[in-house]
Image 1 (tube, rainbow, N blue to C red):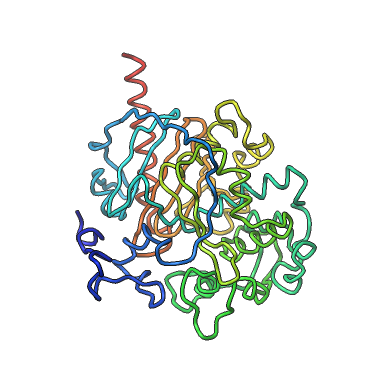
Image 2: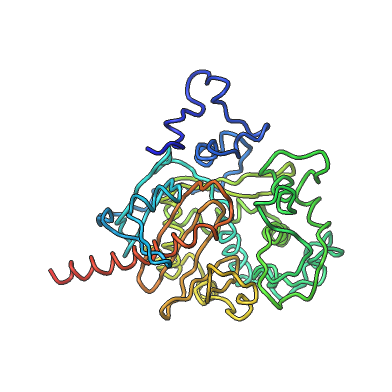
Length: 408
């Protein structure tokens, strides 16, 4: 148990908890360190949420077939290495699970997380709305070549005034926007507050729908990948307006009811009811990834149309992505609100979120890795030098074990 472990620090323990152990949304203590490690496992307890229903059916079993990773080393680019335990602790891991060939080969939790605990996903939830949007495109309910204002006229004078739906999906909208979680007065914090993920300040727009029209265009769209948080909320508005349904209902009807989830997916909401970030359990996050490993088919039933699967598994434009000059993600791409790691001829979709959340899908190896974390600093790139080698170590260990088992 580490010094920042929320169980050791006894946040919100007792009836009632001592005043110095209370974590609140309203006073900002929910996002202070080390309270954050407790918060990410209890966000529905602190703020309003909207349910993405799991459906009436039984959950799909994840048969266990454990692999021992305890002696696995994580070799870093600088020539040093971390033990498995050092990797878990140094990255403030809350939960890590690995699914291979549909079998749960590793699952471990820390800091109060557990199989039935909803953990904050941060920006990983973008990949859910990206999938929903791609389904709507294939169904003819959404035109990805349409200009955004033809669907959401309120954005006509904003950065999205001459952007297409595809520009939004692929994060190539050029906007005047400072996105740096490490800078307290960065524009991204206005998004966080207006979207209901932090208490509103006196000068903040009261909802994300009030904020988005204030974002202005910078240069030409489509020239370079530019990861900007407002695109998620613009896409959410587009999808809701086109379908005349909220995101939670769409995600439930199109995806979550059909993957055998054990628990509902939960969205945070702003003052106007618009969904922002989400929470889910680790096993259900794996099930979402397994849907793509199985190319949209589960138990003989097609959940995702083939064109959706092909669009997501095909990756994005590496040349456009490279112009963003993201040092920790060489040769990557982005499309449909998914990140893509291009490695050894494989295209691996990745959902990424602040503080170390990710869902890594390797269809060729039939591998899904889901991780929850609560690193003190938000930018995921700070953890890439450890987590990317960790993924490679897991892949190598599974390959080694599989070869041994087949040889036996």
